Length: 559
Image (cartoon, rainbow, N blue to C red):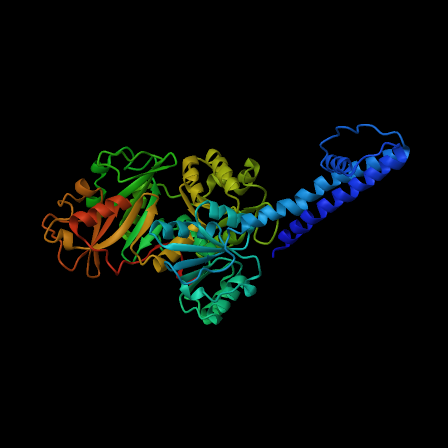
C-alpha cells in the first residue's frame, strides 16, 4: 500500500473520532458552563460545523469565559485541519493516483519491440520524431516526474524511474531493439553495464559530454559513443573556415560523393536575381537546388522560374567540388578578418580549438573572464561587439547555450554588422527557422546533430530528413530503366526530383542527352514522404538496402 493511501485511510478513521470527541466536549461544556444542555446530536453538529468552518446555526453566541476559550480553540483547530489535510493527505493521494498511469517498470515482451531512450532532452528530440515518423516504437525512460507527465500527455510511451538506476528491474530489457543513453556520462555507463548484466545483447548508443569517456564505454560493449556538442562544434567551425575539411560550407554529406549545402545568396553574387532556369545550376555546375529559406520559412521543390533572391538561403545537393564552386558564386566576397566566437562554453571552446589548430585568428567573447576569453562582456551589448571588432570579422559564431539569448544576439549582430557571415548553434531545432528569419547564414541544433548521427543506425537508412518536408532516398533503377532521368516525367507525375544517378563508384548529377539509366544504377530522389510513396507506387522501385548515411559534417575522430 502506498504511503499516501495509508495516510488517507488514517485520516478517514481519525476525523470521525475527532468530531465525536469534540462534540461530546461541547455537549458537556454547554451543560456545566452555559447551563444550556445539548444532546449528543447537537454537539456532533456543532463540532462538524466548527471543524469545517461552515458557520453556526442554533449556537452563535456564548457567555462563560471558559466556553468562549473552548470555542476559539476548536475554531483555530478547524482552520489548521483544513490547511493540513489538503496538502499533506488529499493532494498527495491524487498525485499518486495520477502517477499510477505512468508505468514504473519496463513492459513485458508483448507487442512491437521498441527503442529505449534513456533521459529525454533536446539532444534526442529530433531522433524520437524521426523514429515515430517511420512507425518505430519508442519507449522513454525518464527520471524527472514533470518531464515524464508532459511526454505522456504528448502521446509518448514513458516509464517513470522512481528509484535510482541500479534498483530498477531490467529483466525485460531483452525486448528492446536498441538503447539510446542520453543521461550523464556516469549514468550512461551504469545503464550500459546493467543492461549487459541483464542479458541485453542489442546495440547501445551513448551520447556523452566528455570525449575521454568514449573508450571505456566502447570497451564495455557500446555499439557507438558520440559527443554531439563536439560534432556540432566541428560543423560550425567548418562553416566559418575554408581551412577546415571539408572545405565546402555545407550542412550534410551523403556518403563519399554527394553533399548538401545551405548557402545565402549575396547581393553581389552573379546569381542574384536570376531564376533557377536562367542560372542552369545542374548543367553549369552539377548541383541541384532542393529548396530555399525565405523569411524563416523553408520552401521545398522550387519551380524553374523561382528567382534567386539576395538574402535567401538555398539548399543544394551535388558533388563537393561543385558545391565549392556554387559557394564562390553565391558569396563572392571573401572576408579576411578574425573569426569572432561569442560564448566560451563547451561548444565555444571546441570551435576555438579547431579554428586555432587550422591557423585561423579568433577572438572570443564571454560574460565571465577566464583563460582563453579575449573580450569580457555580453554579445547583446554593442560596446562588446565594437571591442571585439565584429564589423571587420571574417565571420561571427554564436555558441551561446541559451536559445533566446542566441536569437537576440543574432539580431544585434546582424544590425551592427549586416555583411558579416553569421553562424549560430541552438538547442531546440525549432529555433533554427527563427535564426534564419533574423538573418543568420547558418544554424544548427544539437538535436539535429544527434538525430542524424543515430538515424543511420536505427532507421535502416530508408531515407533521412533534410528539412521538415524534404527527404533524400536512394532506390534501385528498375522504374527508370532505359530512360533519361530528366525526361521520364518523374516530377510531373509524383512530385519527386531525380537529383543524381549512382553508377559503380561514380555519382552523376549532369546528364548528357544520350544518357540512359542502366540496370545496376541507383537513383537518388528528393521529395516529401507523400511524393516518395507516389514514386514507389508508380515506378515500382525498391529502396536500396545500401543507402549510405546522411550525416552532419564533422571530424570522425570526435565520434
